[in-house]
Each structure stands twice: as C-alpha cells, then as structure tokens.
Image (cartoon, rainbow over all chains, first blue to last red; front, side, top):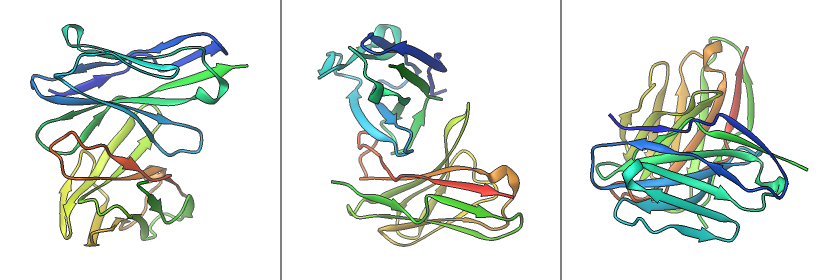
Length: 114
Length: 114
C-alpha cells in the first residue's frame, strides 16, 4: 500500500532556529515522485519542490533544503534560520507513475515564534 | 503563472440545501481535482477529472457529485448538504503526466453547514 507519514503533527521553534520536518513514504513502485507543499494561513497550497525517485541529490533553495534518502524512504525538509513567515502547514506528498493522483501526508503545522 | 480560482472563500449553508462549489483554471490543464481538508485528516481526494465529461471517484465520494462540461471548469455538488460536510474544500489542476506533473491549488472554500 502507498502511504505518506508525517509523524510531527505540530512543531514550535523560536525565530532563527533551524527546523526539520520529517516525511516517510511507503511504496513498492520503483518510479515515483515526491512533493512538498506549504499552506499558509490564507489556505492556498503552494508548491515547493518535486523530486523523482531516481534523483537522490539533495536540493537547496535559499533557506530551504531537502534531503531525499531512498534507503530510509524519507524526504525530509529543513528550514534554516526560520522566520515568522515560515509559519504554515507543510504537506509531503507521493505520486506514483501510474496516474496523476497524489497521496498526501496529514501535514505538519509549524509555528515560528518571534 | 497558473491560476486556479474558486467561486467562494466562505460559504454558509443549511442542512438539506444543494450546494455548488465552482473551480476554474486558466492553464488548459487536463486534470482537475476536488479535495476536502479536515484537521488531523489531511487532504482527502473526493473526485478527479482527467478530461471534459470524464470523472473518477476518489477516496471519499459519498455525498458528492461533480460536473465537468468545459475543460477549465470543475464543479463539486453537494446534493443535500449535511453537517458532516462542513470542511475546507480545495480544488487543484495539473497537466496529464503520469505522476510527475505538479498540482496547482486554488485558495480553498470554507464551507459551514448548519
């Protein structure tokens, strides 16, 4: 069965701290795609990153970085030097190479305290 | 930029009313999706459409129907609204891509059924 687990329901950190959001996925497929989305208080999900299963290179985009490890079926997301504007719900998601439906994790609510 | 719009940000309806939620995308995407989001449950797929007049049930289609008469518009219908349909409803669209295409989301509609 396919599944995405975000074990951290809610995290609070003080501004400027680094924070890592965990994502563990399950699939027997060899080709799949992983995504992270951000949902700020306004409600709209904003796409952050997509990764395919053959590309295990880590990615950095400004203060955001992603660590993809097939050996542990994890796709973790780190925010460096967090800011209040990073406060949001973050969703990790999995898409198999069969159709265009996405399996979402339940999300991690991140609070950045000033 | 992809633009997905939803007809209402907030909606209050009474039990038993017929409710229409509309979603429009301007990027000529083949796929369109309706999700509902509830605390602790994440995003759950209600219905999915991969072409005009084509639809496929998602994980929780009971109590809902959909209509896609034009490529850019995907409507979610609650035939007889019930209080357990109080939720945040999110629409998304994507190109056909066997999993690797990103879904783009609208701002969401918060529906309250009294």
